Structure formats: C-alpha cells, structure tokens
Image 1 (tube, helix red, strand yellow):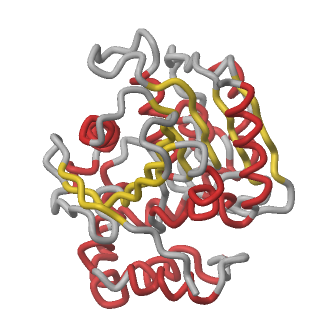
Image 2 (image 1 turned 60 degrees about the vertical axis):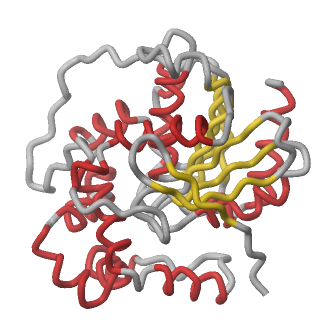
Image 3 (image 1 turned 30 degrees about the vertical axis):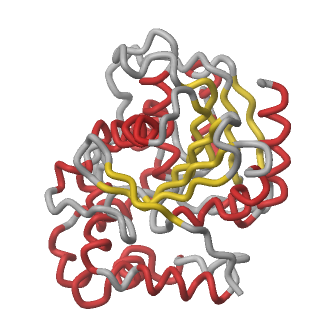
Length: 308
C-alpha cells in the first residue's frame, strides 16, 4: 500500500492555489520541501515521515503540477513567479522563518528562494526569512549556464531541454502526455524507475494523464532563461558576471551517477556558497531523495543538528 499524505488547498497572494502537505508540530522549526520534474510532493515521502516528528514539514505540489493551479501562459512559470509562490505559501501558513529544501527543478527554485530570503536580500519582505538551504541534485545557475557554454558533456546531457521547449512536440504531449515526451527526448536512456516501487510508478503515470499538468510541467522549461545551445554551437566562456553569493548554511546532496547533471556541477560551487557542506552519494542516479532515502535522511539530520 502507498502511504498517502493528506493535502490541504492553500490560496496564495500570487493568484494560484497549491495542494500542500503540512505535517509535524506547528510550533516546530519549519522545512519547506520543493519537488522537481516530473514528480510531486511525493519526491520527499521518505523525508516527510522521517522528519515530521521534530519539524514542521511543508511540501506543496508546485504550480502546474497535479491538482495545483495550472496557468496557461508560459510566462506564468518564470522563476521569479515560482520563487514568489514559496514566500506566499509561507505567509498563507503563518510561517515567518524556514529552511528551504529542494530537488531538481525544486532545488533550482530553492536556491532562488534562499538567495532572495537571506539576510540583506533585495526584497525587504523576504530578507532574513530563510535560515538554511538543502539542495539535492539541482545545479547552481551560474555554474550550469557556464557548463552549457563550455562543457560538451553537460551540453549533451541537457539537449532534452531543447526537446521540452520545442512547441513542435505539443502534439506528442497531447497524444501521449509526459511519458511520450520523455521517450522522445531520452529514448532508451529513460530510467527504469530505480528503486521506485511499481505502485509509485503507476501513481506517476496517473498524474501524467492530466494534459494541462503536462503542459504546466513543460512550461517550467519554456519559461526558464537558461540558454541551451545545440551541439553544433561554438564553445566559449560566458562574459564575466558577479553572481551574488549565498551566505547561509547550505547542504548540497549530489548523486554522482546523475545522467542529466554530472558531478562537474560541483566544481567551483564553494566559491558561490562559502558556508557549504557537500555530501556525495556514490552509485545513485538523479532521484536521490527516494533512491538513497536513508543516506539523504542521515545527511539532513546531521546538517540540521549542526546548524540549529
């Protein structure tokens, strides 16, 4: 049997409604968990059960996913709107300060939330509200963009993003959903499901039957400002850019066998996140929160205890 989590519908000041898991003592330190593509709050199912005895654990299905609001316009999925959703969610649930946790696309948004919410951040309503960050297999934007322009391995691994952005594939999405697009983009490189049990895979497939959600998920890629050159484009160093540093205590968990995000994404990250701890997880693919749940739980436990 699948361990279901009760969700509540939460209306946000950003104009969307999210389905949200909210577990644990309401007066405990708060952790907000952000899932990535193409999953849901269930990315964090092992961590929610493990941590909710000691922490308030909040895990939304983000905009575009499952039953949450699915705006039709690509522009509604721009990163600044996705970041704003998380602060609006905290406001709606009366949470002032929190630790942000993210994987994959959720990790990218978590980095944005952390940068905006650290002390001295540009938005006075958000600054100082995020105390710690935990990022699992999500690239730092400055490193990722540089790798796409200079590194053949990362560029090759990211060509699927061009397929996701190509509106010529919209018919494929309408006919076959996200599963069809994944097969088109990855071919025989599509992961078999790792240690995901069959019932969890079936749940995902059922979620992907909602075509509005399929386009919502793809719109995260289409609204992203990241430039993914084709394989024939020249390689060149990008112009120098002074990217803001993330000063808060940060744990980066990295599965070393990630097909889409090779370990080169860790090179130079300590210069951008000085108060950093990196946990490398050998023999694990991209979906580290459930592929290596015990290791992830142990790393989070240690990090939260040391930075309490």
